Amino acid sequence: MLKALPIKLHEAEHSYEWLGSPSHPEKIILEKSVTEVCGWDNSREKTARIAATRDTWEPRGLACHSALEKFFKSGVKETNEGPYKNWINPLLRKEYWYEFQPLLVEGRLCDLKKSVGGSLDVLGLDKEGKVILMDLKTTSRSGRTYSTDRQLGAYASMVIDHYRMPIDEIRTIWCTPSKTTISPDQGVDKCIKAWLDCWQLYNWGAIKGPFDEVPITANAVSAFRERQERAPFAGISSHLL
Image (cartoon, rainbow, N blue to C red; front, top):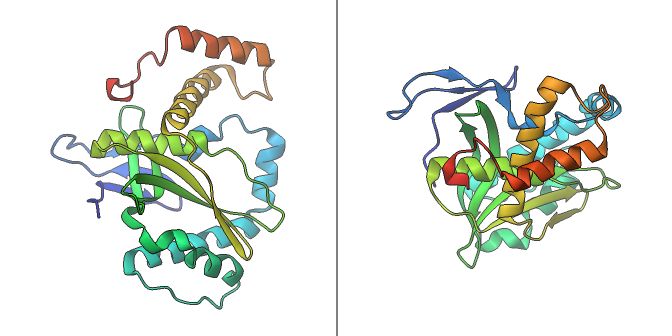
């Protein structure tokens, strides 16, 4: 297992604190979370829908994440008989885990330059020795999948920054009642680019306002991205280029 970074998650506030290291000794409360940055352009309707269903998805997500973390750290598969057994039991019985070696589980990560913190579900080695970064998502039986590229791109960039190790693949674990599916490789470069695009637009939105509060057109967003293609990732740390 990789050594945990000196980062503390303050769960009530969902904020992260850098506790200091020999190279960065100063303690810092990080200003933002990956979740906040990735969701900056959510519409009011989507934000309201997420808040209205919190009592459903939050305890389910916590239970499944806790079960997967315990499994990876202990190696013991326990049959779950709780209210989320239809999610947890197929998740832990997934054949993919038979030859999977976790390196980092529920790892706290950060980008000190951006003052952003986040939590990685799992980083590990598959049966071919590839380094795989993965995130767990739980949904209802009728739940739809969605893009996780920007979120996982953030974690990938932070792993590369702090651990100086390559990542071969990025995948999402979709956990539904009675079935767990692991996505195909989403592409490391593609995900990191999605995160960097999101970061640029997040900072633009901090000045201009969310998309549903100002007349930012699709053409304006496209033009912004075209400018980034011509002068890519200005101000981004060199190790990500």
